[in-house]
Image (cartoon, rainbow, N blue to C red; front, side, top):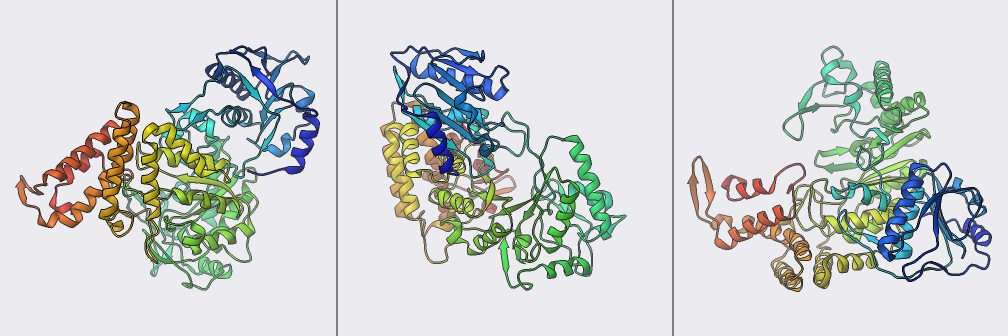
Length: 623
């Protein structure tokens, strides 16, 4: 969070004076009243009611909520912009949309903030920071019981480092979880309208090959001696997508894109962000005019930098033609933020050209290793980010935090979350989309989503303390074993020189590091002890079994890779199948049952239900 030392000192001098403790509740009774403005906003009403609810849950005292009558009273809790001397000089202009202020001067408690969600965020922060309430998951919170509530003097002004904070996890989109942890959504998730009209890979939305491909091939990429206006099968195998990009120097392309963007804005006038960004391929236009712009603004000679992802290897072309085009679009829509991808071939920052003020650069760390922080583990990406940070402060980083091909695979990256988010904060990044598992369930889903949410508000968080608190609350007596398991995973995740833990990897690649036979035996022993420790607590036992699923999944994948060649086979109709050994069958059935019991929906992104995994595991062709 941003620290505003001078403002804090001024606020402290004005509001506290000879500040002292404030007793809100004594022996389950309170003579305090929650005051909201005479014409309260929805956020102020909600903040007051949330505060009333939790104070009652904590202490049994139900404080009344009243609108301001214009005359200061005694024992007030001021929620929102109540007309009082204590709130008149607060620096609302410094709080932005959702910064918060919490103050206790010994007479009154003040909970207020920025105009969008600041008041509600202030209430939830007060409950967590000063009353020890916790919201660990969408379905699990901790509310400590107190007969008496005493508060110390408080001057707490918090302004987030990131103006947009999204955690792309299934359960993280629960409205209450989002409000508690101050999260956003680029789509209509949670309670708030989407700020984004279009998200990413949008060229085809504004100039569709199906409409223009046959009649105007000159609107599309030129390479290999011809234009490419066609469509190819999409990644899901069920739809099609453009085979190339747009010709960004064709003047008609600019006019059509702007015309269709205006139509989209007319349908969603309240959306602030609009992505005008490349299709999901690396087939950029190499016509004479586009190539000239790319060369003019390139920071590197062609093929001096080469990147490689799931799309193959490609040169770091730079942003010459792309940024020139996007700047022109942004000039026509000065009241909107035009976002564009710096992704794969466009990721390298240009020279001698900068984004317009209302252009947002979206950087994607898709190539980065996950077994060490991105700054040291991926110098190419970190240097590109630093370069962008020198020419703009309107940067959104799309970061990746799970293994997409194997959502249940052990993926020990919790120790990289804080250094990565701190690195982004320190290099002018203003928004973060932390991609996790949008499917239900998944490896370490609960604690990873919780930590990401906390870190996006406060990158300087005491992560070790938060993890310790999570384990104790969530797993009860099994917590020490879960902590030891996590420590073993992470301690053995350094591997050998040059080893990369990829978001596209699988357990079979880690048999010489954190998934070697000796460690797998230790993990299972720890989980045996964890299950025994909570055997009389059904919900905690269920959570432990859920946490054990990644170990079972890893064992099944590794066993099949190493041993299936020695298994007997048989014909079942038109399919050849393995006759699974009893131990393997038991593991497979356990995995299937506990996936269903803990609501795991997919084992890979968008694909492979638990039922499909069970049915396909013994197929010879799937080895």
